Amino acid sequence: MKTEGEQPVYKLGILGASSIAVPAMLEPARAIEKISITAIANRTAYKAAAMAEAYQIPYVAGSLDELLELGDLDGVYIALSNELHAEWAIRALQAGKHVLVEKPICLHPEEAERLRLVKQSYADLKLAEGLMIAFHPWQQALKSIVDSGEFGALHRISTRISVPAKNRHAGNYRSVQAKGGGAFADLGCYWLQFVQTLAGLQPSRIRAQSAFDGPDGCDWTFQAALDYENGLKAECLTSFELPFRACHTLYFDQTVLTVPDFFRPVKGFYKIKIRHDLPDNRSTLCEFEPMNYYVSQLEAFAEMMSGQRADNLEASWERVRLQALILAEARQQRVYEANYL
Image 1 (cartoon, one colour):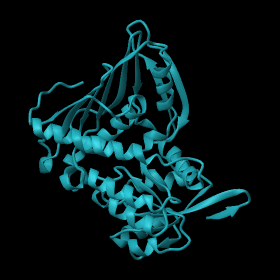
Image 2 (image 1 turned 180 degrees about the vertical axis):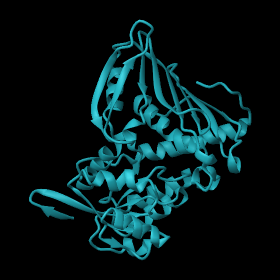
Image 3 (image 1 turned 30 degrees about the vertical axis):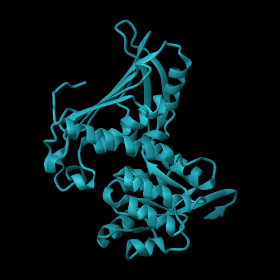
Image 4 (image 1 turned 90 degrees about the horizontal axis):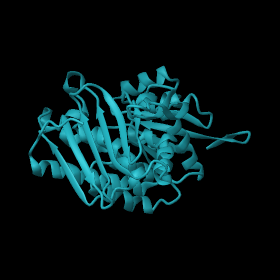
């Protein structure tokens, strides 16, 4: 880490020249003075070189291991294929680097436990999952509304996240089971993180179903529901084949609230609104200034590295465990009914 005046500047390297590295790291870094991207490596070297040229990254390492050996890097962003996330997060920690790993932080509970144990040996280093929606204030605003009881009890959370697959995700990790393929593995984490914020992830019952009729036996449309002891029901539909939609709907005693198009700030600086959704009340309850999810995420990671913010890993481990249970439940059921939310 270097210092310019009173402003610490963290030097980061990128492991993996995948397309997500551009919106998630390279573009937001331009807007954050305390972050500097100084190195990149990729298993296919020419991709790293091309990205370095396009974004003025000073150094292209000859290998992933070489990048981790660079002594002047404070941290790394891992944008490798999903099945490599846990392995390289561990290697990066062992190399003395802070780590921001693209979601999912890992694929299986066994990997989560290994990561957790390794992280315990590196208490001074930060490890964070790049689940970008977690770093925007609209979720905490909704939690405050729920906790206040101003609209009575919250009875139901209904979420739909459908992003049509181009060319059935041919050649993409989303169509390969071993790489975390399928709609629920790719999109369900956003639902779980949201429900976790509002109600926790200790349901009394799990229900899930899918036809698993996508490439390589991946789920192309997936339905899941969590029932809680207090009567709350949280349900979600994720899909790679239905028209685009990203919306949360919350049903209270006295109103219905929606967060429409909550994915929009991945594309740039956009507003998020929390709205009433009653026949006689379509008003906006809260409106947030335009923000970019990835800028907020990178700012939060800088705060983690400086010790101003906790990395909240227990929440990540909890999501990995529950997501695995939900997927297992759907595979056991092997029953599918088209009951779109």
